[in-house]
Length: 120
Image (cartoon, rainbow, N blue to C red; front, top):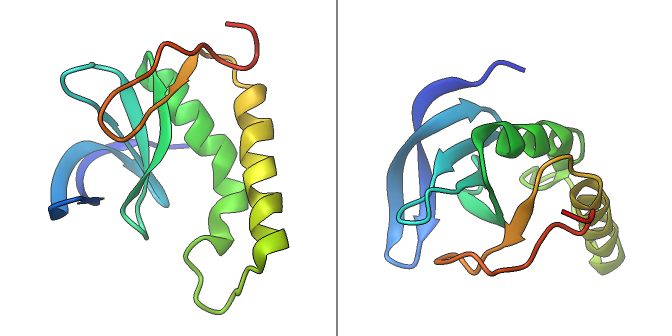
């Protein structure tokens, strides 16, 4: 997958904000401040995924692995019921459990001290 430097919009508590990072639709990755860890945003919704990564390779790897299941996240013709959303979350967590790079949960502002579910 080709990741290119570019600007993208994310949603914040204060509203939309333009960010610089690496873009490969439907995802973008960026370096967070002040933690300097990397995060993934879903471009069509502008929402950041609740994970942080030590390096850009880890963030882009996970974004590339999420790409096949993300087509229903922003498609207005697809209506996901509660069971379908639970299945999507389960698939995301399976991808995260098999990540080859350490990651942390984040609350939108900071990373916690948790290590990856895969034993890192």
